[in-house]
Length: 473
Image (cartoon, rainbow, N blue to C red; front, side):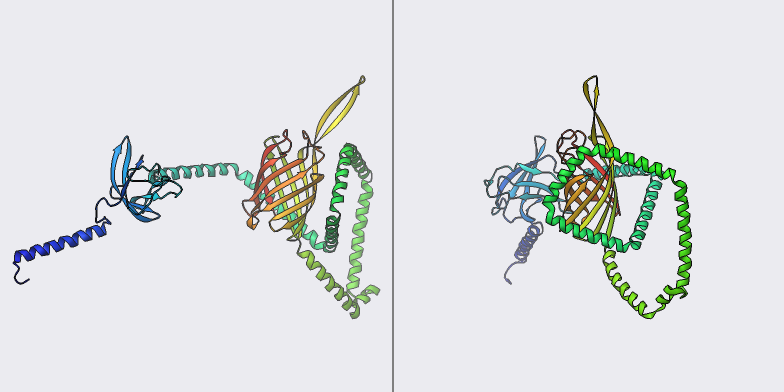
């Protein structure tokens, strides 16, 4: 090195610096050291805004090539893709423009495709292309969606005005009062209620043992009621009128009876005061300590019995449904008594605008004529239900006829899908077979739910969609 001239030393140093800068340029810019390494594929896009030449091509997030060239051809952007030689691309591959960050830089995402298809070779074209979504378009769509949400909020505001909100508040207050009254009744009537539930449990067991025969008997009873229903309804109407007349005739007697009851209550209060003071035979008996101990033991046993009644859960729901086929609404009120999680008893009343049809036969001049009269009547529900995890099976009376049903419960009891089948004798208006109904209930809030489905789908003349909702406590 000592014998080298200064000019040669400077030249060698300059060459070394150029080599180092070239290496750093290729390294930082992720450029290949040898040009044209790999094979070329082509793809056409309608719009490649933000994508430039030398942009990276990634497969599964791994760099697999570069966009070598971009030209305008027939109104579209034609991209020349330089793919690394060890990367295989098949004919069903898909090219997509994607952003690599919030600043809008784009790269070309490429899927290899499946090996069942043929390999793409140098000069082949990728036919499956997916452009990226423009940020401006997304912004406009978000603005449009926000405007629609605002319009919907205004509609709900118009629907639920001051009058509607006041009515809803009054309804909730009435329901709270009804709940308080029912709670008071349950507290006062625990022993009779316990006996009733015990009888219901025995009935459930007997129903499981004799279910098939009971179903046959109920079917025959339903048919008999269908044949004699109009006559029975007339008899009940006459009985109601006679009862009303009897009450009117004996109004004064009833009033005197109420006065006597009040007088008896005052006497009972006086007797109770004397008993508390230890006066009379009964008062002395109550003051006896042995008798007190015996009564305490009896009370303790009664308390254990009442604990089982306190575990009883009770639900009420008010619902209304509108049938688009009949253009009519149907209202119902149901009370559910649930002694435990696995079974419950459902009682309810339904206001059916097209309950049943009555055929009236008249004879004029030896000619028979028939007239059909549609009855709008109240009907009753009384069912026993058994739950198996998320499935509930029900059997009993549905809308005053024998029926059965099943419910599939959503996770966390957010709603359910219900299937009901009743009126096997086709006593309803414009029906030829049983009444079948399938629908979905979904709980929007804790006490508010919506419903919808298909009603009477086995009868073509009555089949229709329905929507509805209600309150549940």
